[in-house]
Amino acid sequence: MNFSNVVGQQGAKAGVLQMWSHNTLPHALLVTGAEGVGGLPFALAFAQYVFCENKTESDSCGKCAGCSKVARLEHADLHLSFPSISHKSNVKPMSRLHMQEFREFVRQSPYGTTYDWLQYINAENKQGNITAEECRDIIEHLYLKAYEGKKKVLIMWRPEYLGKEGNILLKVIEEPPQDTIIIFVAENKEDILATILSRTQEIRLSPISPGDIAEALVMRSLTDPKKASQIAHIAMGSYAEALKLLQHAENDLFPSVKQLFNVVFTNDGVGMSKFAEEWSKTGREQQKNLLHYIIQLMEHAIKARYMPGTAVNLPEAEAEFVTKLANTNVSFEGMGKIIDSLSDTMYFIERNAHGRTQLHALLLRIQYIVLRRKIDV
Ligand SMILES: [Zn+2]
Image (cartoon, rainbow, N blue to C red):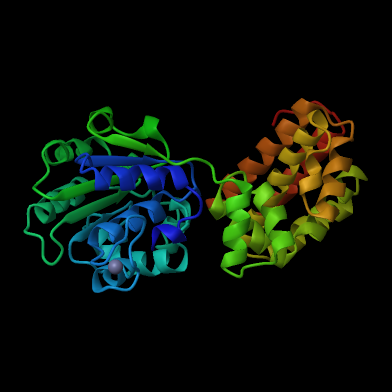
């Protein structure tokens, strides 16, 4: 991953390169940014820059042995740590037990979310974890001599998953072995141990501009410029979100969204039951995609109601739908409740709840809200 493959984030790139060239890099960096803005790709691009044998002022070469080893996540002096799980009760979760899967995951989806990752390793209902054993493993590795690079880099993705055992790392963060760079990549600063937070220097990633997202989608030949621009405007600054939306657009979930609101607004009980039945036959991922897509459209409808004209950035059919939704007599509070119900249903479906029951209950809840009946949701 070169810096040029990291979408947007010009400010953060310039910042870290300046620290590098001025030799003012702190022991430990904390890269922060919302899900999907590219924390992990940014950290990997910087690691590649560190190990590149042929770097320019602004980027790694992408061709030398150092670059290709980092790109494959196989550089001996690059240590990676991330939330993991264990399928056996007598084995503690450790990153290195999942390294092969992690390489494959990052190769396929460098902008993948932690949730995607945990699904990838079949975590199902298990929470990911960064354990005390993992911390000790990290310390052991960092004190080894650098193999090939002159430097060593540790990237810890999501230090929020460290419990109190994270304190094992304090000494190594404060006084790392010579030529060691520690990079934490986080989304929620408030969930990081205060002791770690105070020992790091923050680099903040911002939401990616629609222009940068659209350009990246077109450059990677994922879609045409028109669709790229439309998606970039709905993605709310997240490249991961843009990729998901692109998938939705390909699967064309829109007819189903229209059908859902149609059966709800026309009070069509049989239609609702049929809808739940049909959708329960699709996979869990597809159900989540649909719900997620509806949430996005609902949020746009709320926006469109208070800032008329904002829907114009959406694809034509969606814009029309959002405008209609914004002009219904469902109150602002009702819209919020519908969004809450949608996210609750996603939450339960993620956790393997029975699809048909969940979807049917959701439709009934939305119907009650639309008809403005009082219910306990
Ligand atoms: Zn290189």
